[in-house]
Length: 290
Ligand code: UTP
Image 1 (tube, protein in one colour):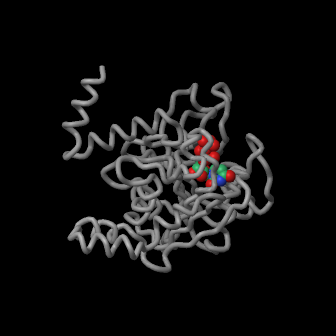
Image 2: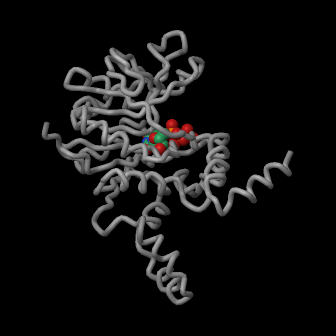
Image 3: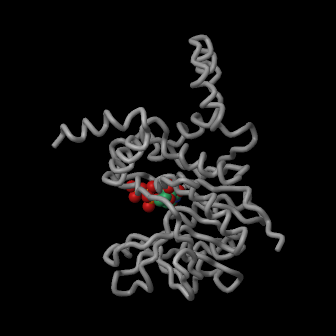
């Protein structure tokens, strides 16, 4: 079947990041670094590795550092080249999107994730697109979005990355109601945002990776508030279930919730331990802290 490829990705970065105050008072949460790369860079590199060609940031107030991060710094390039740090320069050139690949739109008011995605509707047009939340960081052999694009190639429709969570945590996530589940792919018949454990139709929860069809904008155009008084992406996705296939994909890899402090520390340690040049020293530090 000839499917439209997933060429565009939305990065909603309009949230307030209140759980990281005061660190996020003047700096976007998405610029917090895990080792030496800001969270948003991991997400952009993951998208690029999945074949994304257009990177759309939905920003808010105080997010200029993100725009600067994905722009050329003539002074820095000059300095690095004068100092003979060509490897550092080459690394920067390697992950930097090319001119014209990045666009920005402002959310103006943080009314929820669904609202953030809706703000990018004119930049998406009539084609499938990905959404990546930078505070969900996934460590995996094959980048998580690439795994999803491969599944999309087989199934078409919409694909969300999911993981099984303890039942007492269902009220933190969007949860799937499934028809059929083969252990890797689950076909979805319903979606609920943050259900109480007793009401959750399953424990399969959506993490911050989505491949969606533009029909979600139909529902988002209505600007209806859902759970927590926010315009919810989960409600918009639920409204499209009758239009075509919708799958949850258990991703291969480990997800870190970097939107909360413990998850952030865990990610920092895991990424440090995954780097051969750092791992021995970090192991020693941890052992000495006990
Ligand atoms: P969170 O629920 O983590 O909210 O948003 P937050 O405001 O970023 O952080 P806290 O809870 O105050 O600490 C999940 C993702 O959705 C984006 C955020 O930027 C984050 O990537 N988001 C959320 C928006 O872009 N706009 C919104 O209105 C809400």
